Amino acid sequence: MQKKSYYIKANRIFNPVRKYGWMATVLIAIGGFWEPKLGLIVLLVMAGLIITSFFSGRYWCGNICFHGSLFDRIILPISKNNKIPSFFKSKPFIIGFFIFFMANFLRKIIAVSKYWGSYDILDKLGSLFSSTYLMVLLVGGALAIFLNPRTWCQFCPMGTMQKLSYSLGKKLGVTKKTEKKITISDKDKCINCGKCSKVCPFQLEPYKEFSDKNQFDNIDCIKCSTCVANCPMKILSLEKEA
Ligand code: SF4
Ligand code: SF4
Image 1 (cartoon, rainbow, N blue to C red):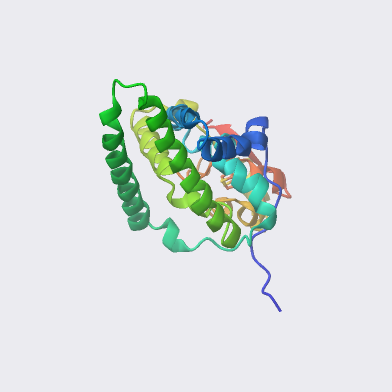
Image 2 (cartoon, rainbow, N blue to C red):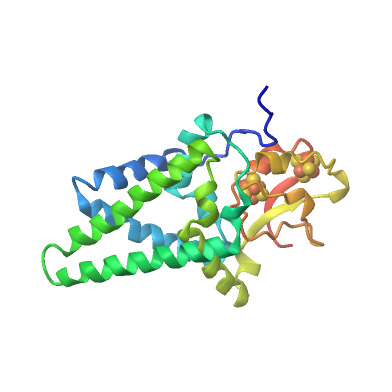
């Protein structure tokens, strides 16, 4: 008999961007073969995620990201939804993959830069971004089906960039005023059922980590509100620091 997984395939929370964002992933990754300039949209995506994370941590991953939309909306129903291997969450792997990805990306940018000033430059640049998007669709998609929808997100270089930008915002004291975090209204009302962890797309454990201010400070929380919607005691919410 197959062992029952600890994790639950609970419906995730979808705003309109998250509901239909997966279409943009397919458009950019596949459409890029016909219209390479579509890849230039990724520049806006990168700017968006760096700016939002400066104020609000990994909010982008749980509320806007197009690949996240694909993983949560399209792949979740067919995913094995297993435990994410801790290897993919380890610092050495995350840093190593970030360096590998960025070095590779830089090498391709340098190759494309020789077209600077020609009519081809936008197509070449767009093609570079859309092929990178396709790579994430294929690798992230395979991991999502055979392991867990949000496996890629554990070491995604865009997630790492957000964490760097967030750390800067935090150091400068900006996030204190702008960041919303998962907040528990009353720790004594928590029945330790672990549901918030079982439904969490990142398999975090909010109920074990609430601070003295009743907030969940984990840098990897994507503020997706899935735990808020599923807590049976209705004691969770997404709030700024009081
Ligand atoms: S802790 Fe809650 S808000 Fe944060 S990632 Fe998990 S389910 Fe989403
Ligand atoms: S789901 Fe709610 S009641 Fe259950 S452990 Fe989490 S915070 Fe506590």
